[in-house]
Length: 499
Image (cartoon, rainbow, N blue to C red):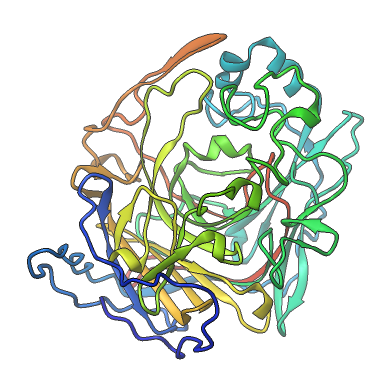
């Protein structure tokens, strides 16, 4: 792997890295092999980022280096949006969600999974409020869609705390500001049409305030981990499963007795920097729904210290010297770069369906690991005068995830990981956007045998299937995550020679 920091990493000894050198090793049972690259920040052109030119074999006792990533297409710019024009000029109206056209029947907001676990009391909890949606198109030809979700707590037709996506400025640039004042809201950008089979999506993140520490503390601006201190904030009615810790698992419990998102064992905040999902026209939904619908993604996962407890909270890679340090020693503003693998087809009682999660960092030489490992740590205090760029590419062989900026401990870096669709019989979930890209080998049935019901969903990845790519940027979740962020320069590239 090559590494060329744009600026030298800070030399003041801030933070703690491991005192012993990292021993590189093959993760034979829990890893996927990926291509990895750390290069200088250079995203201004429409050409593909360079590959690393590494070889394949190493001396005995060390893992093989990642295979050389294939040469990416030469990209041409198709769309660009910098939010100079007024957003939502026609003032789109809020519409009550009836779920007449659900995305699925599994863990969609009104999915069967929850009632099969919790019983009839869950339906009472779900029907105790109304959900409202709003969407409007953005950009040339309306190629972008802004999608928002909000909760009407007492079903009186009035949304108590509306999320919004509005024009603003940050760091001397025009931006779109996403504001979600309550964790039951959601605000995202997505493509209006499904993406082509090869593309590059990128944008600049100008500000981020969805949890994590500021100036060394999790409590700031009368908030805790980015959440307001007003009232209770729980996952109701989409808990982590009746057998999960942090509550009694009883769906008839009052709202405040469900799992707390602000603090406690399930306290966390976060933000999706850029995700690719497996269906068209995505809209904010409960967090568990998304755990079965993502292909590849980059996100933040800002755990409250209560959730970290006496453990490490995971680990963070310092890409300047490829050493890990504990998440608990970070500012909790980390970047996870990862892929979704095959799910557990038969989750146990009181659990949830969800894909396996494989994290990529430069510390593992591009080997994706089933261990929570962040690729970098953001520095929100530097924003908006400094920003971060996130990008995802899909070519004929796989996906490439890319994050660039001035990272804590590492300095200015570009982190770039290519993952083929299948490696060692380990696929990226629902990678095929066309039927001809996949032969049905991973098809199976999702089976739930739970406390209050059973269900089987056959053919979860059959031959002849196709799962169109859509990207999502923002707060996807309607039962967790709260805060604000601003972004600009959303760009879509396609291979040269294609329209």
